[in-house]
Structure formats: C-alpha cells, structure tokens
Amino acid sequence: MRLYSFPVTPNNRKVEAFIRHFDLPVEIHHVSFKDRETQSPGFLAINPMGRVPALTDGDFRLWESNAILTYLASVFPATRTLPTDARGRADVDRWLHWQSCHLMTAVAALQAGTTEDVGTVTPMLRILEGQLAGREYLLGDLSVADFAICPYLITKIGRKLDYSSCPNVTAWLDRMEKLKGFVATQVRMPPPAA
Ligand SMILES: N[C@@H](CCC(=O)N[C@@H](CS)C(=O)NCC(=O)O)C(=O)O
Image (tube, helix red, strand yellow):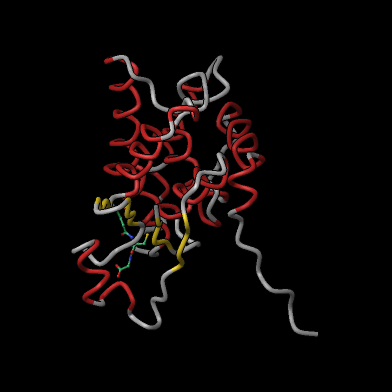
C-alpha cells in the first residue's frame, strides 16, 4: 500500500497519524506541490481531483481522507477503531460527515482569513464537549473519528480558539496530541538562523 500525502494539512495528518500510530505497513510518499506532482497524469489517474491524501492498494485507488481512514481500519481490524455493528458504524459515519461538512468548512474559513468570526466554530466545540462528557475518546474507545476530527483543532488556528468552557475537549486534545501517531506527525519548524 502507498499513501500519497502532504504533511502539514489536517486531512493528510489524520491519515498519516493513523498509519504511524498503528505502525501499519503503508509506504508514505510526500508529494511535491512545487513540482505540481498532484497535477501530473500519473497522479490524476490515482485521484482525478488532483488532491491528497490518496491511497493505492494494488490496483485499488482511493481518495478522500475519511474513506481512506475507514478502509485502513477495515483492512487492519487489529486497530479496533471502526465498530462493525450497524449503530456503532453509523455513529462513526456521523462524526466523519460532521467533520468534512461542518468542522472543516468552519476552520478552513478561519485559516484562509475569510472570516475572523469564531461564531461558527464555538457551537461545534460545545457539541464535542457534550459528546466527550464521561468519555476518554469521542465514542468511548479510540476510533477513526478521533483521528479525523482532532487534527483540525490542533492546528495553529485551532489551538487559538477559546476552550475555556470546554474542559473535556481540552483534555481530549491533550490526550490525542500525546498519541504516538500525532507525536510522529508534528511539524517541527527549523530553528531560527543564528
Ligand atoms: N475532502 C478531501 C480534501 C482533500 C484536499 O483538499 N486536499 C488538499 C490538501 S488538504 C490538496 O490536496 N490541495 C491541493 C490542491 O488543491 O491543489 C479529503 O478529505 O481528502
């Protein structure tokens, strides 16, 4: 298996963190945007959207980060991160769709500077706060939903949001950042030139 990725964005980090957390046998290839690698005919044959992440597994080609997460969790069931009963699976899907339809849009607008209004993100933090009450992870046990959602909130902008009324979210983010996969995918800035 081969993952095409770019290390600094949440959509890519969620998948890389998952692979590195569970030491999955997936080769990680960092694409070069500078060389327009994602617009090359070879890459467009893998993902016609010309975006990363994308995964190849033999002749199977998969794109969309959350589809990649659930595929990896299915192929490697020892990760125990994707419930197989109908309700458990629907619960995971709910949070994955929520992330891609709502959380990503709101955080991306802040990141792009389109808005400085955190008013759309704050109610989402409250929803997470309620969900995390009495739970260590979003669904109780660690699941792909945690990997999908947390990278948006541990970006530079995400960390600047006001978590003062969300102690459960704060504790969860601290817990997530300490996971092996997230430690391994931290972007370390080069030291300032002397
Ligand atoms: N919904 C997609 C989003 C993929 C996406 O937008 N990837 C960005 C990086 S986070 C990208 O490849 N951008 C390059 C471009 O638009 O040319 C997913 O979750 O995988």
